[in-house]
Length: 327
Image (cartoon, rainbow, N blue to C red; front, side):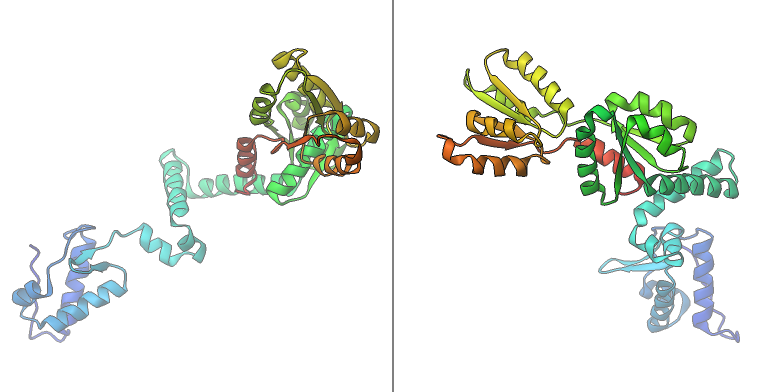
């Protein structure tokens, strides 16, 4: 055990002598982090000091964050470094200690790779600045022939990200990007290569997203009785074409399919009167309900209305939030 010596004939108060010796013993790892320190009784027997004086020294060390008292156990040396740094930095660091530890570890890794602190700082700032500029403007792009799909994406992105999102036809993307040097282009994976070829020369990144697999809806439709009439409604003409092909491959001619976009009132009314099930995207659903209600006098049995949960795959939304720093 470390021996502490108190000189009774010294001009330095005994409590200061013990405090300085304990601080040196801890700093020199004679008492390493996590080790239990001698009890006040043990130190009183060793130094001849009163236990109240020793308790005063321990309280001073605890106030400085050097030791910590654990109820019913004793006094222990605190792990110095990260916990202490958190106290001396910003309130945000105190709020997110785990994130701060990750930053420290990343900086340590960069230094081990040969980076200087200035270079590490520049790398961090460059990445953060890039992401801030990318999240400042989000553009959704799809071919002009199917802007409905883009409208669905804009609708869901604005709701999920809580930021403004602009819809740009793929044919006009080059012209729009020529007037900006920051932002992120979001598109379906189907059109990502075309979008990247336009965005790359403008130093604008493209993030492709996957669409929802419609697993629950397809499972429901696969169980319908043969001869059932199914109405499909979407603001996206491309979705309607894809849905027709998928359902035909799933059920062949067993189901009678009717499709319409919400702007086509005539077709919507025909679907409302004939279909036993109507499946629609969220954007079209309010219109479907209005049309079905308006046609209820001509309907013997009201159709079952099914609203698809979303258009963009949930994991793609989470990835996009992370890339934009919005998670």
